[in-house]
Length: 281
Image 1 (cartoon, rainbow, N blue to C red):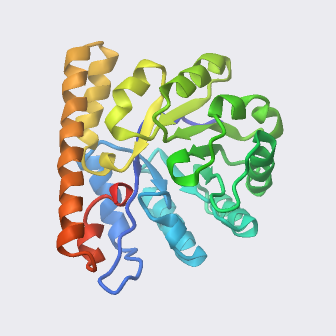
Image 2 (cartoon, helix red, strand yellow; image 1 turned 60 degrees about the vertical axis):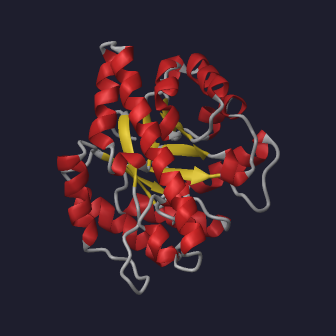
């Protein structure tokens, strides 16, 4: 791999823009990039993940989105990370090859969640088969056990993974187990891995144990506020950092209550729910 800028700070887990008839709305992405950079001060994106409903899209749709984000993000975004995980290994490999071909800044892979790996070696073997199709692209393991049901601790997974997957760069850690995260940071400081936390309402706790940054849906619209929290934490001004974290929590509590109401009020009108962050639905 060539020299690269370290991935840290905020990464927006992008929402997939759709037309009223359910087609990918690609022209919106140019405006989306400018909005993130200029209004939210966020210069990294995570495409086709949970928030973007990547696993509900076709392979062709995922490729189109990846291409557009890389194209529109050129000279504006620092990192465009493409999630290439899929239930089908050949499809995941195809998406990895495509991400490499279009110049993505990194790829991420979620653990299979139907026929689940139960042992570390099974999971690493699968990840190795995917990442080998993009041998020069930084790779991030996407750890989200609440959705995948794969309970293999990241601390265990990291042992020896760099030898088997040289492009391994870090983890999108979307779990509330801060003990696991802390052990990962503690044992891998020398390797300069990147641990990006994925539970927005608990980011401050993750920063305290050494997370390098964060990937989340709220950074699409609370990016500027969360960057102020990062600045307060770095000073350090923990009282101010807590204030910003509490504001994020209050916002999410409001959204969750609104989602519950909308599900009761219009259970068959999914379009109303799509206006909210898909990660919360």
